Image 1 (spheres, rainbow over the protein chains, first blue to last red):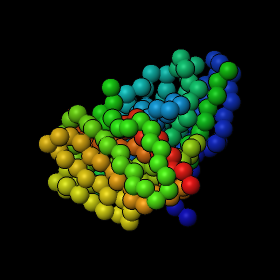
Image 2: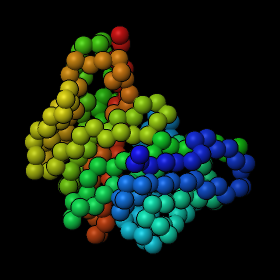
Image 3: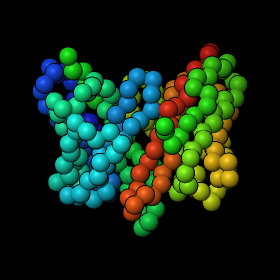
Image 4: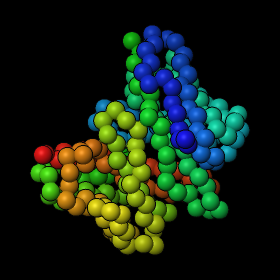
Length: 115
Length: 113
């Protein structure tokens, strides 16, 4: 059963604590992405990785960090430096075929609440 | 602002009617995609149209792309209550050798039974 899994579904943390969100895919996709979605808004790109051991900052990378040690895993750490971390976090992956990139497959999301 | 801007922001129709959503973007693209998101869930890919295509169909979905106007439309025919969701367009583009997807702000569609 292929797909992308994110865990946990809901996460609660106290302000000042770092927290790591998990994202795993068994689709053998090259690229993986992290997005943040705030209520009633679209998706904003945090980080993305096109290949193992390489990743690039997206539009809102400040206060976040990632790693890509394995093709199937792309964890996101929300650090205490992120000023407003409460949001819905979505992980996605896509397959690269030659120079063509196709649709993204999304995980179910993690809703992070920081108080 | 976002690369993709959907219009309208919200749409409410009766079951059986058609729903049309529009997306405008700013820069040259490789392709444009439409996604659906049910409340509190991840996004699901609906359809992809490449920059050299003008129209594409998939079941009750019809997508058009006008690269001269930098716009796309998504038509859902004979809508059902189960079509109630938010719909996003995403443009894919290559910048500085990397490949990115940029999402619009979405259209919230409500289909009344």
